[in-house]
Image 1: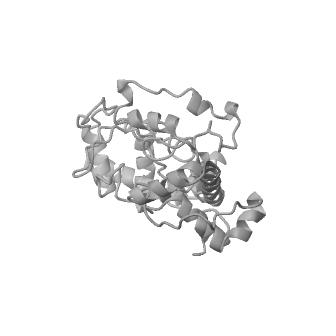
Image 2: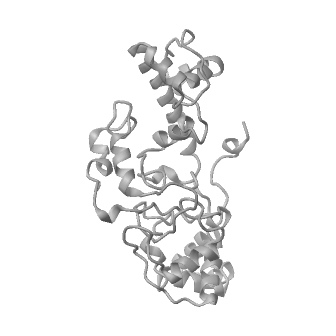
Image 3: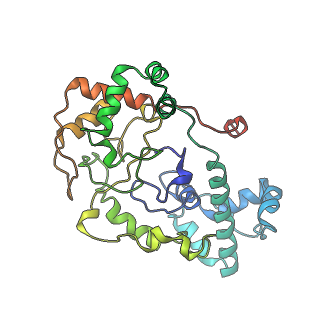
Length: 306
């Protein structure tokens, strides 16, 4: 999924196991299959290269130069032993530095907002009763695809609102990914976010308890959560293949054919119903989805490579 527009999302990752941008940003850094490092090592990086910038935002940075410089994953026995040998104060200091890294990344990501697409221009023309201009913005096939999208194709059951996602979780019968472990989706994500040391109610959160309603009142168990996944934003979706939570489908045609035939879910209950759309109608929906492409609406300084 894209990070563009995620400032408006209450849940992150396909199973919603994180509940803020900053908590999500921390996940990949200690994930053994992504950055594969550990928070003590990151504290050294901040100390060596970014101490002045860090202190200008967060105040005095704790001393970390005496801590072991280990580059391994948090799953490494050496890293785990070194962390266990650290004092409680040092462990807490390192974690606060790590948390502030996540909040810094989130502050940057909040600048990344989708820009105006041809669809947005079309909507603006319609709202202004300028039908003549509207007809010059979208083709007849794109308009037909829009009608299908909000009509008989049932796309707005999941993909609605300004970002074309309802930020909820749905079982749409997506097949399992060959060679990967079984993924139970939201059924596991609820337990992970409740146990997350960086969730909205944690000591590291800047939110007040009343700001954490999604976490406090979410449905946490039940068969209906099995293999439910978060529908991503459809803005710029034509540029973001492969699709689904593990890249099961290479093209939008494959995605639409899946929804059209509504196969049984590998587990849980699929919400899909057979649509019986024609090949032409599927092509029209894809034509419409391409009208959602747009540049990022942010200052150019935020898009320069570091």
